[in-house]
Image (cartoon, rainbow, N blue to C red):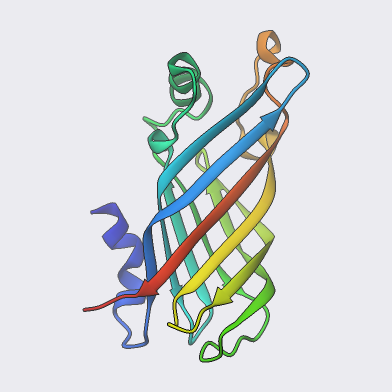
Length: 178
């Protein structure tokens, strides 16, 4: 239901939309004592090629860790997923793209990234590939500083959790049929 309201502004216009509800979103933390990785395959990405607008969303609780205790601490102590259930991005691709031609484009997307209840204006690098079937593959890798989103890193785990987290997003978007 929450995804519906996020997409509502897009659905009111007649332009073609591309969507995935199975985007792979993962993060990597490299710290002196431990490397941590968690994956979600439940990201939603919507693209409106005509205006080059992009909206993305992932449920924080959907991230899976190798250790159950890490997952519990991530949700309860750091991300407070009961208070801040989603991470979202809403922005626009800056480079002009011919969406009718199969090609790969290096891009930047500018917009608002919201994590842990904090919204920040960001410019993210990425790649868009349009295949011969008009499917659109998106990819982005960027870094998030915990302090920028008020995510606390207690002293006791400073050597286990990095201050700067690598985030990767990828997905294949297909035309939305109504």
